[in-house]
Length: 330
Length: 126
Image 1 (cartoon, helix red, strand yellow):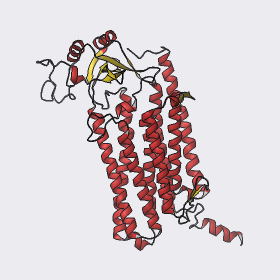
Image 2 (cartoon, each protein chain N blue to C red):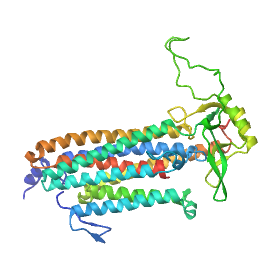
Image 3 (cartoon, rainbow over the protein chains, first blue to last red):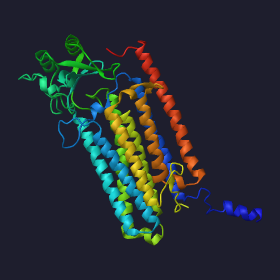
C-alpha cells in the first residue's frame, strides 16, 4: 500500500480510531465535563466540612424519616431505598440497550418504560426528602454567632441514660399576647415584607426551659465519642439566655436547625443539581421512548440512540452513588 | 465493536453466559455492596471507629466500597469494558487525575482553615 492511499484512509474521514461513533464519544466527553462539575461541588462540600470538622451535622440524625412511618427512627433506610431504585432503573436501561443490539423493539419499549418509572419514583422520593428536611422536626435556637443549640433530656433505656431530643413546641410556653406581628408589604415601608416568623419567640423558649427542669441544651461540638456535646443544666440556661437570638424550625438557605447552615446549602444545591439531572434524564428517556414506539430506530437500523441516552442515565446513577456516600454515609 | 461483550468479571473469576446474565450478576453485586454500606452505617461497629490516615476507618471503607460500585457501573453498565484502550484511558485517567488534584487542594485548605480557628488565631465562637 502506498503512502498516499494510507493517508487518504487516515485523514479522509469516516475513520474511527477509537471504534466509537462520533455521537457516543461526544456523550463520553460531556460526561467527563459533567463529572468534573459534580466533583467540584462535592469537593467544595468537603472543604466546608473540613473547615467545621468538629461541629458538622451527623447525617443519621438528620435523615431519620420514612414515608408513612411517623415517629419511627429509621436512619438512612429511605435513601438506601432511593439508591436501590436508581440502580434498578440503570439495570432496566442496560437491558433496553441490550435488547436494542438484538433489534428487539418490543423489549426495548418495555425496558425504557420501566426506566422512566424508576426515574420518576426517584425524583418523587427526592421531593419528599426535601420537604421533610425543610419542615424540620425538633426546632432549635440560633445564637448570635450563628451556632445552633438543640434541646433534649436524658431518659432511661435498657438501664442506660440516653439523651433524647425534645421539640421546641413541646416545652415552649406560649404567651397569650404575642409581642411581634409579621410585617407585611401593605404596612409601614411599602413593598417591603419579611419571611415567616418562627412559631415561638425567644422569651417563650426561655420560659419553657425554666419551667421544665430536666431539659438540657446540646451544642454542635462533637466530643471524643463522636457525639454532640450536652451541656449541664446551668450552662444550658446560661447559653440560651445570653446567646440565644432566634428560634429556628427546619432548614432553608439562611438557617438550619440541624447545625451549620452550609450543610443545608450544600444539601439543596448538590441533591438539587443531581435531581435536575434525573429530571432531564427522564425527559430525554421519554423522547427516546416515543421514538422507539414510533419505530424511528427500527427504520434507522440501529438502536445506538438508546445506548447514548443510556450512557447519560448511568452517569446520573454513578453521581448518586457518590452523593449517597458523601452526604449520608461518611 | 460494541456488539461484542466481554462477559467475565473479577478478572475472569466469574464468567457469564450472556450479556443479560452479566447485567443481573452486576446488579446482585451492587445490591450486596449497598446493603453492606447501609448496615455498617447503622450499626457503626466499635472497631471501625479507629482513626486511620486522618479519618475514621469506617469512612475509608465507605469510600472504597463506593469506588467499587462506580467501577462496575462504568465498566459493565456503561460498557467501558468493551471500549478501546484509548477511549477508556482518555475518559477515566483524565477524570481521576483532575478529581484527585481538586480534592487534595480543597481538603488541605479546609483543614488549614479549621486549624486557624481552632488555635484561636481567629475567633469564631461568640
